[in-house]
Length: 104
Image 1 (cartoon, rainbow, N blue to C red):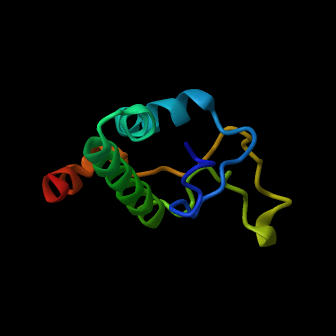
Image 2 (cartoon, rainbow, N blue to C red):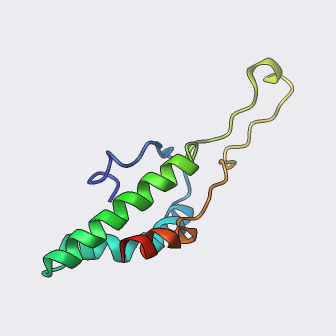
């Protein structure tokens, strides 16, 4: 999904980003993606492509640091311990219900 819609995404996902968080985050977009790729009904396919692009653009604009690892400030690097599992928080795309109401 990210490769096909990379023009709608502005964030990069770190190699060690937890896969379960990634799946839970974008699970709500899976239906739109599957309909946009495999639907035989052209209008349904087009509608889901539009919804998916809008949701990905909105997610990218609200979460520009999604998938990036937090790193300590360079000035305090000697005194700060580095946590490999600490990533930035995000806004869930499930909260973008207004897009569905606009498109429908």
